Amino acid sequence: NLVNEKTIEIKKINENLEEKNSALTETLELFENTFEQAAVGIAHLSLNGKWLKVNSKFCEIVGYSKEELIESEFKDITHPDDLDEDLIYIARLLKGEINNYSLNKRYYKKDKSIIWINITSSLVRKSSTSEPDYFINVIKDISLQKEYELQLQLQKDELEIIFDFSHDSIVIIDLDMNFLKFNKAFLDLTEYSQEYLLSINYNDLTAYEDRELNELTIKKVIEIGHVENIEKCYILND
Figure 1 (cartoon, rainbow, N blue to C red):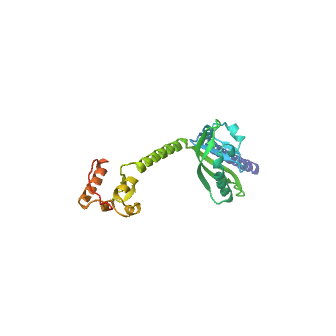
Figure 2 (cartoon, rainbow, N blue to C red; figure 1 turned 135 degrees about the vertical axis):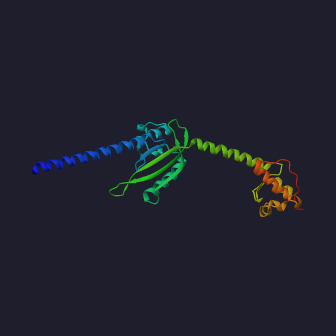
């Protein structure tokens, strides 16, 4: 009868709703687990700069609890020298000029120490109106990388000083024997200008009878990595 048919229909609707609710619950749980257990910091940021939601990794990076961060703004932990660039990118996100941005910046940790982080930020818009809703930030601690880069730069600067001020002539060429770099002592030795040397080949500077030795020297360097005590003649600018 009609009552039984309606009862069966309502039952099927309820079962369908229960299945959808169950699937939605599983999806939300998956999202929460992914958010919370991610190996990078993840934070949701309101349009006015307040933290809305942060995961444990982000708390570990900056040294604050979730409760402390929710009561603060991103400006509170951002190094002042890095704030303007961040704000420019945020403005471009809100204007729709870019979909996301990534930059390296500094944060103040709770203990007032400074760390370097890489942040990738994107804007979430409301599905109904496409109006800006909140930002999603993904944060990685790159302090060790920055320290490594600093050490490399210091070593490079030290080598540059040694290269430039050495009393020994030093020259760098590529495998085709084009000049790449040379120091002042080499310029003094050959008495050629820097511009001229960069316009010629290393062979052009080598006495004709020693040019085959250049080829053999490069071949040996490729094979074993170095050569020592090679004697040859240069054509000097005299």
